[in-house]
Amino acid sequence: MDVSTLTAFFGWCSLINGALLLWSSFWILVAPDLTYRIQSWFFQLSRETFDSSMYGLLGVFKILFLVFNLVPWIVLTIIA
Image (tube, rainbow, N blue to C red; front, side, top):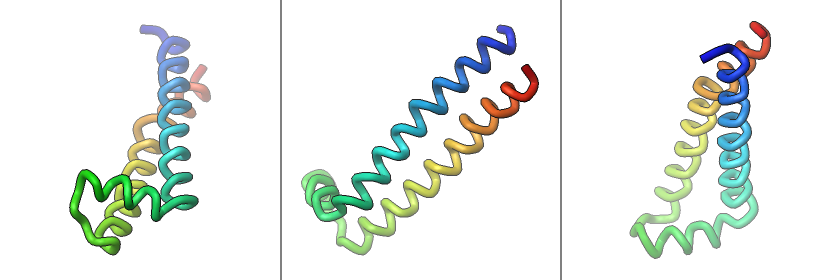
């Protein structure tokens, strides 16, 4: 695999995962009650537990997105 293929791969991964992160954050911030009602059909959690779980999930997802998608794409872009 050459650098241009890896750069394209990480670019698309960053775009898709960034869109998923924004989409998830949007629904948690704009419609938290709707999100809680939908998730409560599947999981019996208190509202406080749900809020802290979603906050933690978005934080971990953001860190993983930065470390495994965005930073490698930036490095490969600089190298190329």
